[in-house]
Length: 271
Image (cartoon, rainbow, N blue to C red):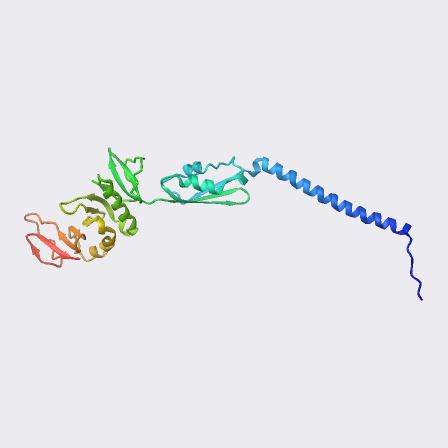
């Protein structure tokens, strides 16, 4: 039989010591690395390096970027890791003109705020100044010398009930049509307190009813397209849809056949 080689304990001790030393060194390096990372993290969290550096606001129009950031309560002195996104969202949405807000943090120190503002559907004049009306009928306290041109002027709406109703109708109206309206006057008549008179940017007037306004007003562009060039008058969309030409002054030449018969200077045209 072949003899086994026997290694004495004296020969093995140096190798065991060397192996233990390597393990101890690796463990020490690991502990030192962890300690270093902990110290670096503490220093980072306590230093300006962990503060928010860039704040970006998107979607604002009437509410200023500065006001939104102030509502959010975030500055370049705010620690990035202490930004409470849900709390910031609630604070921003507390503004009566903001209906939605979202907060997004991106490493290492960026905060992005996106907002959606309530639509301004009109302006009412009070005490010589204009007040914006929001889509829910809320009248803003802030005053402006002139309306922003982004919504029509609402005149004569001295009862909140009708103001809120026309606000809701305007909200449902396509922007392509509402942008054509210059002014809306509450023009109630006996038996019809919902009658309104519109002044359009293209020179026409429209008589309508608040309760059917959003339903019938989208037909306005197609009605105008059927009218003769230069025709002036009122478009009725409250009952049916037809065009009533203004009476002509004495001695004034007729502007041409508008597609319907004439009677005492008035022309009605089915739209």
